[in-house]
Structure formats: C-alpha cells, structure tokens
Image 1: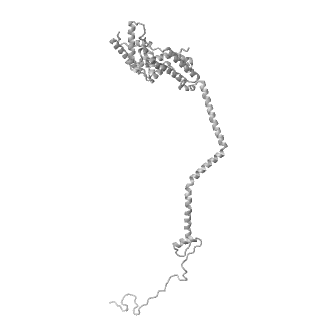
Image 2 (image 1 turned 60 degrees about the vertical axis):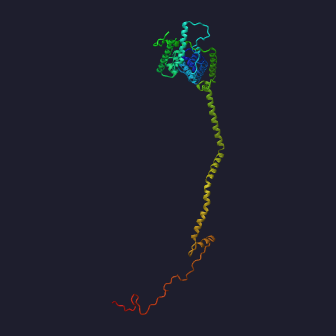
Image 3 (image 1 turned 90 degrees about the vertical axis):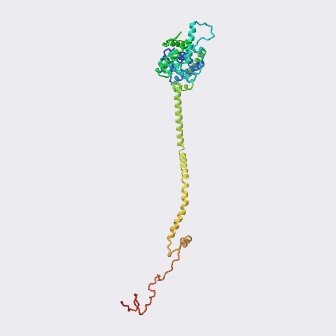
Length: 186
Length: 206
C-alpha cells in the first residue's frame, strides 16, 4: 500500500493499478461529499465522481495530470464539472441529505442542547444556501468544510488569494448576521 | 443563545461541525462506482482505454503502443517505397510508348492550334499573287502608241504572250512639221512702209 502522497502520484502517473485504486478509495467519498454540497443532488454527485476519476485516468494515460497537489486537482475538476452541468443553483436538497441529520421518523429523543444545536445547524445550512453568493458559498465550503488553505482555494476557484480572503470574510459576516437574526427571532 | 457580532469563531465552529456531518457516499453506489473505475483502470493497463481521450494512451509512452507505432511507420514507409519503385520500373519499360504518346499528344495539340490561322492566309495568297502578276505583266508590253485601257485589258486577258498593238503608221519622211510652207502675204506697191502713217512715204513732221 502506497501511503506517501508523492510516491502515490508518481506511481499513478505510471498507471500503476494499486496506486490508482488507492487514490479512488482515498478521495472518492470526499469528492462526493463536496459535490453534493455544491449541487445538492446525490445522483449528480455520484456521476460527477465517476467523471472526475475518468478524467484523471485519461490525463494520466496521456502523460498529463497533476504533478504536485492531487487533492486540489480532483476538487478543481469536480468544481468545473459541477459548473458545466449548470445545476449549481438550480436544486435544493432536503436538509437531511445536505447535513446528514437524522430524519423525522427516527425515535431518538434529543436533549434540549441537541435541539438547539440542530436548529442552529439547519439555520446555518439554510443561510449558506440562501444568503451567500455562489463564490462565497464555494469559498466557505472549501476553506472550512474541506480544510483547504487560502492558496489551494484560490487555485481551485481560479481567483487571487486576496480576493479569496475578501470573499471569505464577507461570507462569514453574512452567515453571522443571518444566524444572529434567526436567534433573535426565536 | 446570542452570537457575538464581533466574533467569527462561533460561525467557524459551526462550519467545522457541519464538516463532520456531511452526506456520506452510499455504500452500494460507492461499490458500483469503484467497480466501474477498476474496469477503466484495467482497460488502461491493456491499452484499450476508457474513452476518447484514452485513444491517445498508446502515444503516451507505454511499450506496446510504441512498438505498434514503429511497426505501422515501417510498413507505411515500405509501402510507399514499393509504389515508387514499381512506378519507376513501369515507366522505364514503356518509356518508348510513353514518349511517343507524349509526342503525339503535343503534335496534335500544335496542329489544332496552328491550322485555323494559316488557312485564311493561304486562301487569300493566290489572289494577291495573280493581281501582282497581272500588274507586272502589263508594263512588260511596250506600246508604240497610246494604248486604250479597254484594248489593253482585253488583250491581256486574251493573249498575254504575243501581244501586238497597232501603232501610228510610219511618217515616210514627213515628221509632221510644215516649216516654210506657209505662203508669204503680198505687199501693196506704192506703200512699202511697214509702220503707221498714211503709207505714201511723204509723211513729214509739221
């Protein structure tokens, strides 16, 4: 099992089957989750995962593909595919899918704290979907849900690092305001 | 529970919790996707490719593709060389026929080009030649008298060889001059003065 990232990438460039399988096992669930957050459609997210790894194989077969940061490359490919499918802003998934919270039919009785936290999380997801712009939501997802650095986020989105900082701060300010208003309403 | 407007930490913490609660990849769908992906990887290993882009996999540098490329290039070169040699041999063997054919073709094309113009010149040439001879023949006759144009034309048409024109008859010593044959006028007797006056020779000045 190849664990080192650089060795894994080099082996994958030589079309090593083990390395390619390892890459899929390591990144496919994360790409799926990221894509689901962007497009809110489980089927589309699954298809995009398939397309991302098919493109990766094509690139390796042509002697191209990522040289350094495989993870950023996969997320960038997924983002472009989501944009190409033009379903970025057209679908809204149920919160149970997006947040993976327990459904209403489940018998577990939550505590007061759990209820407050769930309401807060639902408010956060709603605010992300309704209050933020496309860029702000994407940057927030990459920075805080996928743990990409500013530089990596800038590469994936295709913008300057300073621009990413501005987008991120404005997005957080909007979320803070939305959550504060929601709390005042309750 | 109220959020501090100056502190973004709470929002970031919530986002971090949201990170852990993302939708998981359904296991059955993931297994199916993984199986499909492994097939694609196997196809690449065999050099078949997974899609249109993988058609170029052979050019990417794996050994079987390189060998196939080299073989195809060698065969292509050999085929081109064989065609060239065969064409050269055939041309050498039938060079006479080819040359004749080319000559025939070039000659026939020349005749077609030249024939139309000269024919007009040739047809008009004899007339002009006749006119010239006619004009040249006429001065060769040396008429003794003034020829009439009608008789000249008639004679030139009838007998061009022995042309005889009636001339003025010989004068027989009479050249037509009649010097000294004019009779002298008679003078009157009593008056020989040739000048004016009364003619009696007695004219005197007053």
